[in-house]
Image (cartoon, rainbow, N blue to C red; front, side, top):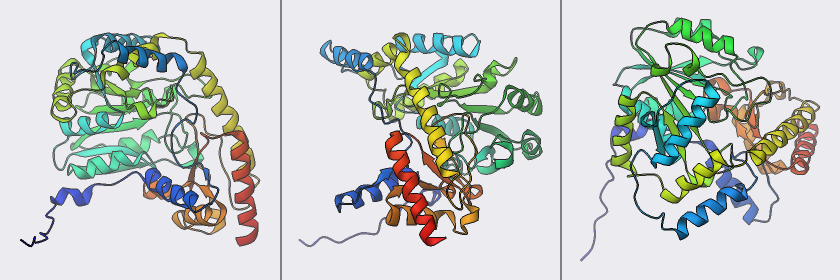
Length: 395
């Protein structure tokens, strides 16, 4: 019997779903490598170092001891307790185990927060340029995305006065990210306190994406959850991927008021059941074991940042501020005269350097590119040389 191809009828909301360009560029770069090209990867946002050996050994031991079954949707009690202790210590707040939800990666906290809080037409304020999943999820759920322009002349810190003007009666959620992806900008303690003042006593929640909080090169991290009166209005997003080079392990967490944590746990039950048990055992070791390797990685990223920024600032058409955190550089490329996407494509195809267009992080990213310094200094120097040679030929 012949089969008939039926039309795929997608829900309309699927047309509002965005993507993360880093993975698309990675696929293109890998395809070029299969053709024999040598590509320097500065596109993907993950540490190039291996997960510390003590964490890997803890996971292997857990597998041998049978940690291969379901666990509570919110996470293993021992891991949640370890997370509560670490967040309490590092943010100077009291955190209980029932305020912690463990999820497979950081993105579920973004998705679950909006699923739980945002009705169609509700306004969400978010940084732009910023992590593209923020805007994607707001649009997907029918919310109104309200961008706050992160400007270079402010070292890509949020302008709190500008943000305050965007707050309306429909504002339901404000998203902040510090240290920030893609710019490496860092909110000061004064910025955070000014934001809390701007919100005042209004019924607005804050999702504070603090996934890069241990990758800070200047000063100390300050969370809005530490501001008196804001702990119960804050969802802290953090995880293991960046600090401990555990991107492939898929383990993040949210810290929030207990009643919201209950709903987050139900969303976990309905979507993923639970985060892999043996990886959670490894997470306990990550938090409670030696922190020497994460600190070495932070120092190495700082050295690489310095090499990249110094090199790119000597390249025609490029200028770059020194990022204060994370492992990204966000150079201004306006003097090249090239649109961001066109330049990113040319550098990949013609120079063998994979970076991302600033517009991959929102409309206000035009005129910039993002490069990840999560590669060796040797490769970073090769990339700088290739970009320099390309600009000499084409500009």
